[in-house]
Image (cartoon, rainbow, N blue to C red):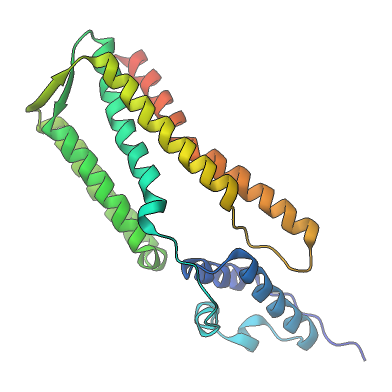
Length: 233
């Protein structure tokens, strides 16, 4: 007699994988755990919900080994890139207008607010996932604060020639992007199936490409914003 076959619900799989990702479980271990769930459901005919219960709770019950990333090492390039973006845009505008670059209190506050917001978000990913709508609403607060600070707090801290600051800002952007590029190229960690070697290789390549594109997103975005600002002004 042939055993009944049941597919694991895609929503259950996504929640299961997400929970293990938030727990910093290695992608290959996640793929192995997912294949075991699929195999059980295929043999028993049960749904994943019937066999294992709520996906997040089941993922936590597995108590799989984790490899928590060092937050500072992960965030540092992104935070340096953010600072480089702010500095570059302000310096390009000053250079275009033939004025010195003015480091204002508002620019310092804006950079500090955004850096603090990104760091806080990275430390509370679980809460953000559980309360996505509220997280989106709350994200507007630091963004608004950064904009308001940049507009209102115009007291000058220091004035410097604009072109060297443009070079400094670009160097910060490129340095952060290159650091992330190298890290992603060597540390891509997709969820891969232990029974599909070809699929695992494809997933690895795809994760590496996505990570590399993400590493260069901030320099590209800064260049686009600089060009748009130049055209408008």
